[in-house]
Length: 472
Image (cartoon, rainbow, N blue to C red):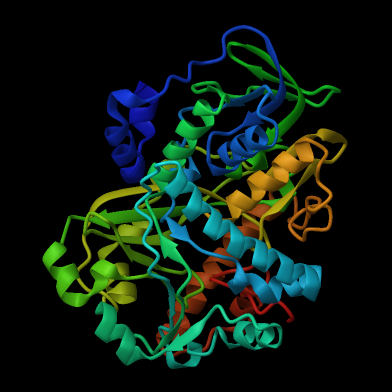
Protein backbone atom coordinates (compact mmCIF):
# COMPACT_ATOMS: atom_id res chain seq x y z
CA UNK A 1 0.00 0.00 0.00
CA UNK A 2 1.42 3.38 -1.00
CA UNK A 3 1.87 6.44 1.20
CA UNK A 4 -0.86 8.11 -0.86
CA UNK A 5 -3.27 5.28 -0.06
CA UNK A 6 -2.55 5.50 3.64
CA UNK A 7 -2.93 9.27 3.71
CA UNK A 8 -6.32 9.26 2.03
CA UNK A 9 -7.84 6.05 3.39
CA UNK A 10 -11.18 5.98 5.17
CA UNK A 11 -12.82 3.44 7.48
CA UNK A 12 -14.30 1.29 4.70
CA UNK A 13 -11.18 1.39 2.54
CA UNK A 14 -8.84 0.62 5.42
CA UNK A 15 -10.94 -2.45 6.25
CA UNK A 16 -10.89 -3.63 2.64
CA UNK A 17 -7.15 -3.12 2.20
CA UNK A 18 -6.37 -4.87 5.47
CA UNK A 19 -8.41 -7.87 4.33
CA UNK A 20 -6.60 -7.98 0.98
CA UNK A 21 -3.19 -7.97 2.64
CA UNK A 22 -0.54 -9.51 0.45
CA UNK A 23 -3.10 -10.83 -2.05
CA UNK A 24 -3.49 -7.43 -3.74
CA UNK A 25 -2.95 -7.76 -7.49
CA UNK A 26 -0.36 -5.31 -8.86
CA UNK A 27 -1.46 -2.19 -10.74
CA UNK A 28 1.75 -0.27 -11.51
CA UNK A 29 1.71 3.35 -12.72
CA UNK A 30 1.77 4.01 -16.45
CA UNK A 31 5.37 4.38 -17.60
CA UNK A 32 5.97 5.52 -21.16
CA UNK A 33 3.55 6.05 -24.03
CA UNK A 34 0.91 3.40 -24.75
CA UNK A 35 -2.13 2.72 -26.91
CA UNK A 36 -5.28 0.70 -26.31
CA UNK A 37 -8.81 0.22 -27.58
CA UNK A 38 -10.61 1.81 -24.61
CA UNK A 39 -9.06 4.00 -21.92
CA UNK A 40 -10.96 4.59 -18.69
CA UNK A 41 -10.28 7.41 -16.23
CA UNK A 42 -11.29 6.63 -12.65
CA UNK A 43 -10.93 3.49 -10.55
CA UNK A 44 -14.29 3.66 -8.80
CA UNK A 45 -17.56 1.86 -9.45
CA UNK A 46 -18.25 3.47 -12.84
CA UNK A 47 -14.81 2.89 -14.28
CA UNK A 48 -14.52 -0.67 -13.00
CA UNK A 49 -18.05 -1.71 -13.98
CA UNK A 50 -17.36 -0.28 -17.46
CA UNK A 51 -14.10 -2.20 -17.75
CA UNK A 52 -15.70 -5.46 -16.62
CA UNK A 53 -18.64 -5.01 -18.99
CA UNK A 54 -16.32 -4.27 -21.93
CA UNK A 55 -14.37 -7.48 -21.30
CA UNK A 56 -17.62 -9.44 -20.96
CA UNK A 57 -18.80 -8.21 -24.34
CA UNK A 58 -15.43 -8.49 -26.09
CA UNK A 59 -12.84 -10.49 -24.12
CA UNK A 60 -10.03 -9.67 -26.57
CA UNK A 61 -10.44 -5.91 -26.20
CA UNK A 62 -7.42 -3.97 -24.91
CA UNK A 63 -8.83 -1.99 -21.97
CA UNK A 64 -6.68 0.22 -19.74
CA UNK A 65 -7.83 2.05 -16.63
CA UNK A 66 -5.93 4.85 -14.93
CA UNK A 67 -6.57 5.97 -11.34
CA UNK A 68 -5.08 9.01 -9.62
CA UNK A 69 -4.47 7.18 -6.32
CA UNK A 70 -5.69 3.60 -5.78
CA UNK A 71 -8.93 2.02 -6.93
CA UNK A 72 -11.67 2.94 -4.49
CA UNK A 73 -9.87 6.01 -3.11
CA UNK A 74 -12.75 8.38 -3.94
CA UNK A 75 -16.52 8.34 -3.55
CA UNK A 76 -16.82 4.60 -4.21
CA UNK A 77 -15.43 3.80 -0.76
CA UNK A 78 -16.34 6.97 1.14
CA UNK A 79 -20.12 6.61 0.81
CA UNK A 80 -22.52 5.12 3.35
CA UNK A 81 -22.96 1.89 1.39
CA UNK A 82 -26.67 2.25 0.61
CA UNK A 83 -27.75 -0.21 -2.10
CA UNK A 84 -30.88 1.46 -3.48
CA UNK A 85 -33.00 1.62 -6.62
CA UNK A 86 -34.24 4.92 -8.07
CA UNK A 87 -38.01 4.85 -7.48
CA UNK A 88 -37.80 7.71 -4.96
CA UNK A 89 -36.75 9.89 -7.91
CA UNK A 90 -39.70 8.83 -10.08
CA UNK A 91 -41.67 12.12 -9.97
CA UNK A 92 -38.60 14.03 -11.12
CA UNK A 93 -37.83 11.44 -13.81
CA UNK A 94 -41.43 11.54 -15.06
CA UNK A 95 -41.27 15.31 -15.43
CA UNK A 96 -37.95 15.16 -17.28
CA UNK A 97 -38.30 11.98 -19.36
CA UNK A 98 -42.02 11.20 -19.56
CA UNK A 99 -43.81 8.21 -18.05
CA UNK A 100 -42.49 5.44 -20.29
CA UNK A 101 -38.83 6.42 -20.08
CA UNK A 102 -39.05 7.16 -16.35
CA UNK A 103 -40.47 3.70 -15.71
CA UNK A 104 -37.69 2.20 -17.85
CA UNK A 105 -35.05 3.89 -15.72
CA UNK A 106 -36.75 2.67 -12.55
CA UNK A 107 -36.88 -0.92 -13.75
CA UNK A 108 -33.27 -0.74 -14.97
CA UNK A 109 -32.20 0.47 -11.52
CA UNK A 110 -34.08 -2.44 -9.95
CA UNK A 111 -32.20 -4.81 -12.24
CA UNK A 112 -28.88 -3.14 -11.44
CA UNK A 113 -29.44 -3.75 -7.73
CA UNK A 114 -30.04 -7.45 -8.41
CA UNK A 115 -26.98 -7.59 -10.65
CA UNK A 116 -24.70 -6.12 -7.99
CA UNK A 117 -25.82 -8.77 -5.53
CA UNK A 118 -25.52 -11.62 -8.04
CA UNK A 119 -22.11 -10.46 -9.29
CA UNK A 120 -20.68 -10.41 -5.78
CA UNK A 121 -21.98 -13.92 -5.10
CA UNK A 122 -20.63 -15.28 -8.38
CA UNK A 123 -17.19 -13.71 -8.00
CA UNK A 124 -16.47 -14.24 -4.33
CA UNK A 125 -16.75 -10.56 -3.33
CA UNK A 126 -17.70 -10.43 0.34
CA UNK A 127 -19.16 -6.93 0.32
CA UNK A 128 -21.17 -7.61 3.50
CA UNK A 129 -24.43 -7.19 1.60
CA UNK A 130 -27.37 -7.05 4.00
CA UNK A 131 -30.69 -6.89 2.18
CA UNK A 132 -32.64 -5.43 5.08
CA UNK A 133 -34.43 -2.62 3.30
CA UNK A 134 -34.27 1.13 3.15
CA UNK A 135 -36.36 3.08 5.65
CA UNK A 136 -37.52 6.64 4.97
CA UNK A 137 -38.54 7.91 8.40
CA UNK A 138 -40.72 10.93 9.08
CA UNK A 139 -39.26 13.31 11.65
CA UNK A 140 -42.45 15.42 11.83
CA UNK A 141 -46.16 14.55 11.52
CA UNK A 142 -46.49 16.78 8.46
CA UNK A 143 -43.75 14.87 6.65
CA UNK A 144 -45.39 11.48 7.19
CA UNK A 145 -46.86 11.46 3.67
CA UNK A 146 -43.81 12.76 1.82
CA UNK A 147 -43.60 9.50 -0.12
CA UNK A 148 -47.27 9.51 -1.14
CA UNK A 149 -46.73 11.29 -4.49
CA UNK A 150 -44.31 8.51 -5.43
CA UNK A 151 -46.63 5.72 -4.29
CA UNK A 152 -49.65 7.28 -6.04
CA UNK A 153 -47.77 7.99 -9.26
CA UNK A 154 -46.49 4.40 -9.55
CA UNK A 155 -49.69 2.59 -8.50
CA UNK A 156 -51.30 2.61 -12.00
CA UNK A 157 -48.27 0.72 -13.34
CA UNK A 158 -48.33 -2.04 -10.68
CA UNK A 159 -45.08 -0.75 -9.19
CA UNK A 160 -45.11 -0.60 -5.40
CA UNK A 161 -41.60 -0.16 -4.02
CA UNK A 162 -42.63 1.48 -0.75
CA UNK A 163 -44.75 0.16 2.11
CA UNK A 164 -45.95 2.51 4.81
CA UNK A 165 -44.85 1.53 8.27
CA UNK A 166 -45.98 2.83 11.64
CA UNK A 167 -43.87 4.50 14.29
CA UNK A 168 -44.67 1.61 16.62
CA UNK A 169 -43.39 -1.03 14.19
CA UNK A 170 -40.21 0.97 13.58
CA UNK A 171 -39.53 1.24 17.30
CA UNK A 172 -40.39 -2.41 17.99
CA UNK A 173 -38.28 -3.85 15.17
CA UNK A 174 -35.20 -1.65 15.28
CA UNK A 175 -35.35 0.53 18.38
CA UNK A 176 -35.59 3.77 16.37
CA UNK A 177 -37.78 6.10 18.37
CA UNK A 178 -39.18 9.58 17.99
CA UNK A 179 -40.35 9.07 14.41
CA UNK A 180 -43.88 9.56 13.10
CA UNK A 181 -43.89 6.52 10.88
CA UNK A 182 -42.19 5.98 7.56
CA UNK A 183 -42.03 4.03 4.33
CA UNK A 184 -39.78 1.05 3.69
CA UNK A 185 -38.39 -0.38 0.47
CA UNK A 186 -37.73 -3.98 1.40
CA UNK A 187 -35.77 -4.80 -1.77
CA UNK A 188 -32.98 -2.40 -0.85
CA UNK A 189 -30.14 -2.84 1.62
CA UNK A 190 -26.64 -1.81 2.57
CA UNK A 191 -23.09 -3.08 2.07
CA UNK A 192 -19.41 -2.41 2.70
CA UNK A 193 -18.57 -0.09 -0.20
CA UNK A 194 -14.80 -0.40 0.10
CA UNK A 195 -14.93 -4.18 -0.21
CA UNK A 196 -17.22 -3.89 -3.22
CA UNK A 197 -14.95 -1.53 -5.15
CA UNK A 198 -11.80 -3.48 -4.29
CA UNK A 199 -13.56 -6.68 -5.33
CA UNK A 200 -14.43 -5.10 -8.68
CA UNK A 201 -10.78 -4.13 -9.06
CA UNK A 202 -9.70 -7.75 -8.54
CA UNK A 203 -12.21 -9.10 -11.04
CA UNK A 204 -11.31 -6.48 -13.63
CA UNK A 205 -7.60 -7.36 -13.44
CA UNK A 206 -8.34 -11.09 -13.49
CA UNK A 207 -10.35 -10.60 -16.69
CA UNK A 208 -7.50 -8.86 -18.44
CA UNK A 209 -8.02 -5.17 -17.76
CA UNK A 210 -4.72 -3.31 -17.38
CA UNK A 211 -5.03 -1.08 -14.31
CA UNK A 212 -2.57 1.75 -13.64
CA UNK A 213 -2.89 3.15 -10.12
CA UNK A 214 -1.08 6.29 -8.94
CA UNK A 215 -1.54 7.60 -12.48
CA UNK A 216 -3.42 10.92 -12.55
CA UNK A 217 -4.78 12.35 -15.79
CA UNK A 218 -2.94 15.64 -16.32
CA UNK A 219 -4.46 16.40 -19.71
CA UNK A 220 -7.41 15.31 -21.85
CA UNK A 221 -6.83 15.74 -25.58
CA UNK A 222 -10.06 15.85 -27.57
CA UNK A 223 -8.67 14.85 -30.94
CA UNK A 224 -9.51 11.84 -33.06
CA UNK A 225 -8.44 9.53 -31.61
CA UNK A 226 -8.42 11.08 -28.13
CA UNK A 227 -5.53 10.73 -25.71
CA UNK A 228 -4.68 11.22 -22.04
CA UNK A 229 -1.58 12.83 -20.59
CA UNK A 230 -0.16 11.41 -17.35
CA UNK A 231 3.08 12.07 -15.46
CA UNK A 232 4.55 8.87 -16.89
CA UNK A 233 3.46 9.11 -20.50
CA UNK A 234 0.62 9.51 -22.98
CA UNK A 235 -2.19 6.98 -23.34
CA UNK A 236 -3.95 6.93 -26.72
CA UNK A 237 -7.23 5.13 -27.28
CA UNK A 238 -10.02 4.73 -29.76
CA UNK A 239 -12.47 5.76 -27.03
CA UNK A 240 -12.07 7.34 -23.59
CA UNK A 241 -14.54 6.81 -20.72
CA UNK A 242 -14.57 9.32 -17.87
CA UNK A 243 -15.77 7.88 -14.54
CA UNK A 244 -14.49 10.72 -12.36
CA UNK A 245 -17.50 11.65 -10.17
CA UNK A 246 -16.95 15.06 -8.53
CA UNK A 247 -13.67 15.56 -10.38
CA UNK A 248 -15.63 15.68 -13.66
CA UNK A 249 -16.70 19.20 -12.69
CA UNK A 250 -13.21 20.38 -13.60
CA UNK A 251 -14.04 19.77 -17.29
CA UNK A 252 -15.47 22.89 -18.97
CA UNK A 253 -18.11 20.86 -20.84
CA UNK A 254 -19.55 19.48 -17.57
CA UNK A 255 -18.76 22.22 -15.06
CA UNK A 256 -22.09 24.06 -15.21
CA UNK A 257 -24.03 20.80 -14.81
CA UNK A 258 -22.49 19.89 -11.44
CA UNK A 259 -22.26 21.39 -7.98
CA UNK A 260 -19.52 19.76 -5.95
CA UNK A 261 -20.47 19.59 -2.29
CA UNK A 262 -19.24 17.64 0.71
CA UNK A 263 -20.65 14.70 2.63
CA UNK A 264 -19.34 13.23 5.87
CA UNK A 265 -19.76 9.84 7.52
CA UNK A 266 -18.74 8.45 10.89
CA UNK A 267 -18.88 5.10 12.64
CA UNK A 268 -19.19 4.46 16.34
CA UNK A 269 -17.13 1.99 18.32
CA UNK A 270 -18.59 -1.55 18.25
CA UNK A 271 -21.75 -1.78 20.36
CA UNK A 272 -23.00 -5.36 19.86
CA UNK A 273 -25.09 -5.66 23.01
CA UNK A 274 -26.98 -2.44 22.37
CA UNK A 275 -27.64 -3.25 18.73
CA UNK A 276 -28.76 -6.82 19.44
CA UNK A 277 -31.10 -5.66 22.20
CA UNK A 278 -32.69 -2.90 20.11
CA UNK A 279 -32.91 -4.97 16.93
CA UNK A 280 -30.84 -2.46 14.95
CA UNK A 281 -28.12 -5.06 14.41
CA UNK A 282 -30.42 -6.28 11.63
CA UNK A 283 -31.66 -2.81 10.79
CA UNK A 284 -32.23 -1.17 7.41
CA UNK A 285 -30.45 1.71 5.79
CA UNK A 286 -32.23 4.77 7.19
CA UNK A 287 -32.76 8.33 6.00
CA UNK A 288 -34.98 10.97 7.56
CA UNK A 289 -37.27 13.50 5.90
CA UNK A 290 -35.06 16.54 6.41
CA UNK A 291 -33.85 18.53 3.44
CA UNK A 292 -30.29 18.09 4.72
CA UNK A 293 -30.85 14.42 5.34
CA UNK A 294 -29.34 12.27 8.07
CA UNK A 295 -28.16 8.75 7.28
CA UNK A 296 -28.08 5.91 9.80
CA UNK A 297 -27.30 2.20 9.41
CA UNK A 298 -25.64 -0.72 11.21
CA UNK A 299 -22.42 -2.29 9.99
CA UNK A 300 -21.43 -5.94 9.93
CA UNK A 301 -19.01 -5.18 12.77
CA UNK A 302 -21.90 -4.09 15.02
CA UNK A 303 -21.14 -0.40 14.76
CA UNK A 304 -23.53 2.37 13.76
CA UNK A 305 -22.75 4.58 10.80
CA UNK A 306 -24.25 8.07 10.69
CA UNK A 307 -23.82 10.65 7.94
CA UNK A 308 -24.69 14.22 7.04
CA UNK A 309 -24.06 16.68 4.18
CA UNK A 310 -21.03 18.82 4.95
CA UNK A 311 -20.24 22.44 4.28
CA UNK A 312 -17.44 22.22 1.72
CA UNK A 313 -18.32 23.65 -1.68
CA UNK A 314 -16.03 23.66 -4.71
CA UNK A 315 -15.20 26.76 -6.72
CA UNK A 316 -15.23 25.96 -10.47
CA UNK A 317 -15.28 22.25 -9.62
CA UNK A 318 -11.94 22.28 -7.85
CA UNK A 319 -11.81 19.98 -4.83
CA UNK A 320 -9.20 20.42 -2.16
CA UNK A 321 -8.24 19.72 1.42
CA UNK A 322 -11.51 21.23 2.69
CA UNK A 323 -13.36 18.12 1.47
CA UNK A 324 -10.97 15.81 3.31
CA UNK A 325 -11.75 17.45 6.66
CA UNK A 326 -15.45 18.31 6.26
CA UNK A 327 -16.66 16.38 9.32
CA UNK A 328 -17.12 19.15 11.88
CA UNK A 329 -20.81 19.78 11.17
CA UNK A 330 -21.59 16.09 11.39
CA UNK A 331 -19.70 15.64 14.63
CA UNK A 332 -21.09 18.69 16.41
CA UNK A 333 -22.55 17.17 19.58
CA UNK A 334 -25.40 19.65 19.92
CA UNK A 335 -26.55 19.19 16.32
CA UNK A 336 -26.30 15.42 16.61
CA UNK A 337 -28.31 15.45 19.84
CA UNK A 338 -30.97 17.64 18.25
CA UNK A 339 -31.25 15.77 14.94
CA UNK A 340 -30.48 12.16 15.82
CA UNK A 341 -30.80 11.98 19.61
CA UNK A 342 -34.54 11.32 19.52
CA UNK A 343 -34.02 8.55 16.95
CA UNK A 344 -30.91 6.86 18.34
CA UNK A 345 -29.33 8.73 21.27
CA UNK A 346 -25.71 8.92 22.42
CA UNK A 347 -23.95 8.25 19.14
CA UNK A 348 -20.26 9.01 19.45
CA UNK A 349 -17.88 8.76 16.52
CA UNK A 350 -14.83 6.53 16.70
CA UNK A 351 -13.83 7.26 13.10
CA UNK A 352 -15.01 9.99 10.70
CA UNK A 353 -14.23 10.81 7.07
CA UNK A 354 -15.57 12.98 4.28
CA UNK A 355 -15.31 13.66 0.57
CA UNK A 356 -16.83 15.48 -2.40
CA UNK A 357 -20.11 14.58 -4.10
CA UNK A 358 -21.06 15.37 -7.72
CA UNK A 359 -24.56 16.82 -7.37
CA UNK A 360 -26.87 17.81 -10.21
CA UNK A 361 -29.68 20.32 -9.93
CA UNK A 362 -32.31 17.60 -10.46
CA UNK A 363 -30.55 14.99 -8.29
CA UNK A 364 -30.14 12.54 -11.19
CA UNK A 365 -27.00 11.26 -12.93
CA UNK A 366 -26.37 11.80 -16.62
CA UNK A 367 -24.45 9.74 -19.18
CA UNK A 368 -23.32 10.57 -22.70
CA UNK A 369 -20.70 11.74 -25.17
CA UNK A 370 -18.70 14.86 -24.44
CA UNK A 371 -19.99 17.74 -26.61
CA UNK A 372 -17.70 18.21 -29.59
CA UNK A 373 -15.76 15.01 -28.81
CA UNK A 374 -17.97 11.98 -29.47
CA UNK A 375 -15.14 9.54 -28.73
CA UNK A 376 -15.01 10.72 -25.10
CA UNK A 377 -17.81 9.41 -22.86
CA UNK A 378 -18.89 10.50 -19.39
CA UNK A 379 -21.07 9.26 -16.53
CA UNK A 380 -21.43 11.58 -13.56
CA UNK A 381 -23.87 13.47 -11.31
CA UNK A 382 -24.75 10.54 -9.03
CA UNK A 383 -25.59 12.95 -6.19
CA UNK A 384 -24.53 10.51 -3.48
CA UNK A 385 -26.69 7.62 -4.72
CA UNK A 386 -24.31 5.79 -7.04
CA UNK A 387 -23.75 2.30 -5.58
CA UNK A 388 -26.52 0.72 -7.66
CA UNK A 389 -26.87 3.23 -10.54
CA UNK A 390 -23.13 2.98 -11.31
CA UNK A 391 -23.82 -0.56 -12.49
CA UNK A 392 -26.20 0.94 -15.07
CA UNK A 393 -23.58 3.52 -15.99
CA UNK A 394 -21.01 0.81 -16.63
CA UNK A 395 -23.33 -1.00 -19.02
CA UNK A 396 -24.25 2.22 -20.83
CA UNK A 397 -20.63 3.35 -21.14
CA UNK A 398 -19.51 -0.02 -22.48
CA UNK A 399 -22.31 -0.11 -25.04
CA UNK A 400 -21.56 3.43 -26.24
CA UNK A 401 -17.82 2.81 -26.38
CA UNK A 402 -18.46 -0.16 -28.68
CA UNK A 403 -21.15 1.62 -30.73
CA UNK A 404 -23.64 -0.95 -29.46
CA UNK A 405 -25.81 1.62 -27.73
CA UNK A 406 -29.09 0.91 -29.51
CA UNK A 407 -30.81 -0.18 -26.31
CA UNK A 408 -29.42 2.86 -24.47
CA UNK A 409 -30.05 5.53 -27.11
CA UNK A 410 -33.45 6.46 -25.66
CA UNK A 411 -32.59 5.77 -22.02
CA UNK A 412 -33.56 8.73 -19.87
CA UNK A 413 -30.23 9.13 -18.11
CA UNK A 414 -28.34 9.25 -21.42
CA UNK A 415 -28.58 12.98 -21.98
CA UNK A 416 -26.35 15.94 -22.76
CA UNK A 417 -24.92 18.10 -19.99
CA UNK A 418 -27.73 20.26 -18.63
CA UNK A 419 -25.63 23.41 -18.20
CA UNK A 420 -28.37 24.58 -15.80
CA UNK A 421 -26.13 26.10 -13.15
CA UNK A 422 -24.76 29.64 -13.55
CA UNK A 423 -21.07 30.39 -14.05
CA UNK A 424 -18.78 31.40 -11.20
CA UNK A 425 -18.98 33.38 -9.00
CA UNK A 426 -22.78 33.30 -9.24
CA UNK A 427 -22.92 29.51 -8.97
CA UNK A 428 -20.75 29.30 -5.84
CA UNK A 429 -22.70 32.07 -4.13
CA UNK A 430 -26.07 30.69 -5.28
CA UNK A 431 -25.44 27.09 -4.22
CA UNK A 432 -24.15 28.32 -0.87
CA UNK A 433 -27.31 30.41 -0.39
CA UNK A 434 -29.55 27.47 -1.31
CA UNK A 435 -27.76 25.10 1.07
CA UNK A 436 -28.06 27.64 3.87
CA UNK A 437 -31.76 28.02 3.11
CA UNK A 438 -32.26 24.24 3.23
CA UNK A 439 -30.61 24.11 6.65
CA UNK A 440 -32.69 27.07 7.88
CA UNK A 441 -35.86 25.38 6.63
CA UNK A 442 -35.02 22.23 8.57
CA UNK A 443 -34.32 24.25 11.71
CA UNK A 444 -37.51 26.27 11.36
CA UNK A 445 -40.00 23.49 10.73
CA UNK A 446 -38.47 21.24 13.38
CA UNK A 447 -38.69 24.17 15.78
CA UNK A 448 -42.36 24.72 15.01
CA UNK A 449 -41.78 27.84 12.91
CA UNK A 450 -42.61 28.69 9.33
CA UNK A 451 -39.64 29.53 7.08
CA UNK A 452 -39.62 33.04 5.66
CA UNK A 453 -40.54 33.74 2.03
CA UNK A 454 -36.93 34.22 0.88
CA UNK A 455 -35.88 30.94 2.49
CA UNK A 456 -38.85 29.14 0.93
CA UNK A 457 -38.00 30.55 -2.48
CA UNK A 458 -34.36 29.50 -2.28
CA UNK A 459 -35.17 25.94 -1.19
CA UNK A 460 -37.04 25.38 -4.45
CA UNK A 461 -34.05 26.16 -6.65
CA UNK A 462 -32.21 22.84 -6.26
CA UNK A 463 -33.18 19.26 -5.52
CA UNK A 464 -32.69 18.34 -1.86
CA UNK A 465 -33.50 15.49 0.48
CA UNK A 466 -34.51 12.11 -0.89
CA UNK A 467 -36.82 13.26 -3.67
CA UNK A 468 -38.52 16.30 -5.07
CA UNK A 469 -42.12 16.36 -6.15
CA UNK A 470 -41.09 16.61 -9.76
CA UNK A 471 -44.32 18.04 -11.19
CA UNK A 472 -44.20 21.34 -9.32
